[in-house]
Image (tube, rainbow, N blue to C red):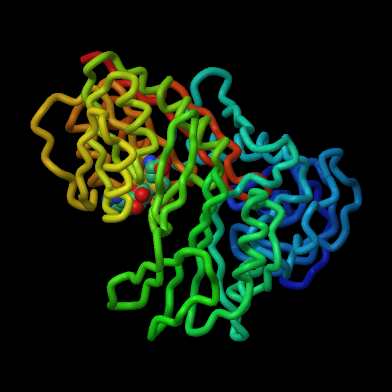
Length: 417
Ligand SMILES: C[S@@+](CC[C@H](N)C(=O)[O-])C[C@H]1O[C@@H](n2cnc3c(N)ncnc32)[C@H](O)[C@@H]1O
């Protein structure tokens, strides 16, 4: 294809698509797709080409010539190109962000998984967070500047941008963040976690000798090749849907509690366990789904690789019919009983071929897949479909409002034999 543009050129475009990653998409005069961050489908824009490839191009926004009615004033002063890379959709009204991310889920399923969304082909994205998309995050991970200040990374860069506060954080986190914002030495990463009762913990990575944390907040210090050092009780406490959970500073917990409540509700409805059903909860974390499914009458095997998450899951699932198995699913365990349903909630890289074929071989009637990446989900979903399952339902969850990320829950059913 002959390119009619090259790097540095300024062109005018009408944008009509939205890509995984959060850029709006238009067509250059030679029909190549051009990705423009900080723009919105429907807008007419002037852009500067920054990356000119054979099949596509990337451009930066120069001017908005015709603005979308969904363009809004970003709520955070650190939003924008060359500024904080955490949120890249704050210029879009939250309801439209959710709609665009639903389109991304459907598009990834079609392109990567070759699977059509059941029903009318669209994926509804539910919005459990506050309507303005602020004050919902109970976890944040920071890098540390040379001068010992907490920072996020700039958009498309490893450069730090100092953070004094973040409007996405839950109210209780602001005070905690102010107490720990500076004074870090020999530290590469600080993760803050805040429970629904206001308890806060830090998980800190050091690049050498553990440095005493400059804070009275309970802290786990993880130094390379050394056991983690815990300063006091490093658990936070959450209440989700009336149930209490503990999670260590190093255990995973969902980033938004309202979204966690919605996830639990969807997992229960999609998995629809009968009394005494046998369920495997893969990537179980501290047992968020295991607790709910066991309370619904299932016998659950919760599989999780992290030692602290397994210990927390045993606490959270006590007195419920849940067996917690510490195992890396890179080599899935043998299961010596029939399995009615499998729930899986892998990290962003997805589950992969080994785990998906193990699940298919277990032959559950239902598989409920929770994902925070529509692309790896679509790849894994294709394997389930090839193994005789059909996608019965799929819902998106706007769990990470103002960011390019989206959560989803998908329910698969085995075709009758
Ligand atoms: C997205 S979290 C889900 C946790 C839980 N389902 C929840 O909703 O709170 C993924 C979990 O998978 C675990 N994990 C990551 N890789 C794993 C692996 N290869 N085998 C088993 N567990 C793994 C992580 O420790 C983490 O707890």
